[in-house]
Length: 225
View 1 (tube, rainbow, N blue to C red):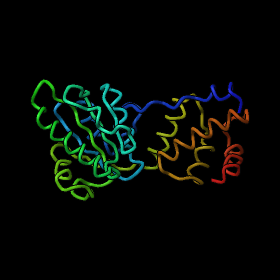
View 2 (view 1 turned 90 degrees about the horizontal axis):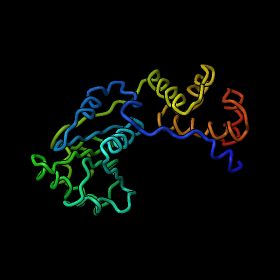
View 3 (view 1 turned 90 degrees about the vertical axis):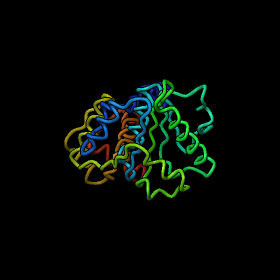
View 4 (view 1 turned 120 degrees about the vertical axis):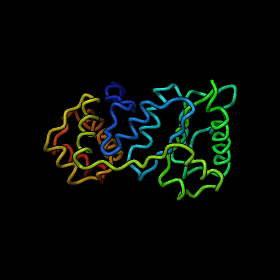
């Protein structure tokens, strides 16, 4: 693919609360929309339920800081003198022992400040409930200090809506035949579907062909999906 063609690839829409398909998670979304400094929320659920989307969306909305186990540095930039309005820590089941210690300290800092003018919002996510999280005991108990929500997976109809919305945001049109073929031959995981859409966008531009079922078949043969 030449440089000019690479520059024409549709940008990936940034995560927002508005482009998140709530499904059965309306209560959790409403809480995030109205959350105030001094509050903490723990979100949990299986991969693909939207935890990362929500944490990144909230960090962007509040000019906050987003971290996961791959962040370098981890929480070192969050200090008493320099604390964002919102701190989001994603997929804490992957944290190392040192990172768990940093998160423990952050929870304590959040608790000290929650009723002061220096309060901040703390959002944390994991793949299981607080009591089932395989972390140090003192940190595990802190996960349930405030609100806890389990995020439910979307139905197939809601996944289809999410995929169509993602395509629309990227300036793409997917026919019924295309979406039916994808849902018949590919994973229903929403993150996998979004990654597929991004790859198809690039492949469509590189071959100068619209996204059709024949293009899908050619793409799957080429990538051995």
